[in-house]
Image 1 (spheres, helix red, strand yellow):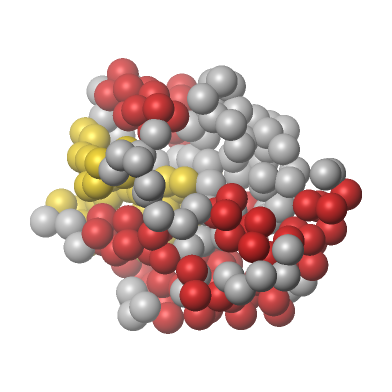
Image 2 (image 1 turned 45 degrees about the horizontal axis):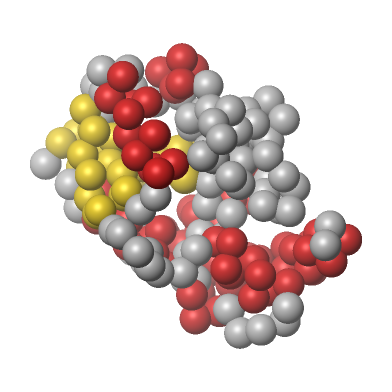
Length: 187
């Protein structure tokens, strides 16, 4: 077991496939750093043409703070001790800044499901980081945040795709209403 591991994602609705990824990484390290990409879609906007969802408000309805709160609640609900994880920004669109937020000597865990994931893998490898691929999925990767936001926007069932704490957070903080408003305003 390594001391420190890192996972990362946009987490624009933290769903059960992402929880699977986070838990798989946590089983391999004592302390897990959960990096939130595009913590600010202006300052850390997408720079790769493969990063299709890193620039628009519709694809990024939740703030960095909200995503952190949502993930924290879900992990605690799943029994992960608070002292065993931290939530930090992860500027994948500006790789030279990654070391400002996470240690270089950590193990960086990834799932590869798309060309954009392959590019992120190459970025981290190019920085000389220790990268371990947890899952390599081709074809259907399961539910995505985009699909869940679309379900929310259309008032269709979505709760079964997210941890209970996430559903509660989204509804309690009016994020579901924000998603619907952004979806219909930007259509």
